[in-house]
Image (cartoon, helix red, strand yellow):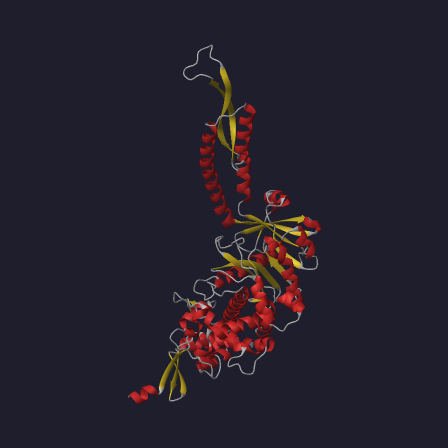
Length: 555
């Protein structure tokens, strides 16, 4: 009995065979090895280390990178990564050296090479792309730039021009926090994804205090150069400045117009009821205007969302009520103040009234309050030292402002420099902008607390940047897998069971990964077998293709 037990070994596969299969189909290991280079004496190639890091990242365990080796204990590392690869090889020292190598090649350059190969292999469409940025906060202190540059100079064999353009470390500093954590230092990730499956195509890691408005155009131009892209670029309102529009004359774009622009403030209100056109997208209607903001001819679409309008009107009502309470308290405080002259009192009351958006002070009255040289009740002959002035008034709503806010509620403006509606009609403009949510989904994925890099711990800006690239590659692999499965289900009119046991042709990969828990690789007398590979799991693997099936011995 003991002899039989010694010949059986149980190793975890779970969903990691799917991840490994998608990585193989992308030819990621080969591409990384080509870009980074292989050292003869290395047990693991740079591509294999990157594959291991992605497997770790998509393991959905709350395990920071210093537990990297422990993550693979009990897992089939030779089966997933390569013959002769054991958990002991995947230690933090090897990981750190690999991150340094990736950084030296250039994170944007390396990610782009991998993404181009993957997009070609998976036939990803790129009719339009979506650009956005988000902040990633970190804990701890980081080495100074001079210290990190010294390390790079010692290790890198690049020429000076490459050093200046590719190797300048990001600065992990305080900046505008989209996560509402101004107390923490951060870095910025700029990301471009395609509307076809939310596939990330471009990554740029920036210092934590970089402003989107100043870099978005250069990101688009760099992307177009690398991908020879001639489609439509979609971005949020950070792209919409006069300087950026001028710089984008040769680019087709769609973006949101900031309502801080005076022209936008007028046009969003100046819509007659008969000008609205019902959108094919339920709950939206559209009116069009022309604009030459920034001296660029463009088409403006004023969009009204029925659902957003209702919630926005309720929000306006709440804001009006909240401001009234504050205004009443402020006026009571002002009425207790004493002023040296009526002019000072008038200035104070007008300043307070103008500080309110939805209210104003009316029926203003000024009263004199004499002060005497002697204490006690003054007689007729008592000399007045001076006269102070006090002010009272009534708070009234600014009806016109409130009504304008209600009219504006639920509306926003989209702009495009594609003037020909035959090339891009209004409905398509709206749909392309709504697809901007693909970026938001990507950033939510990267910030998921279950994702291993949501708390970045490495202590140098270079490694933080390289880790950010690994995070983005995890998103690339995840979304490629999800897109592949959904496309296969659609083409075959198939479906799989979801979390609530209903059948769907649009499952999330997170759920699919959960379905593959407790799948094991058994080594029985040196021969491989799979356990817990149910018919349902085999069905999913057939949709995902040969590269995934091989890890579950379905060849």
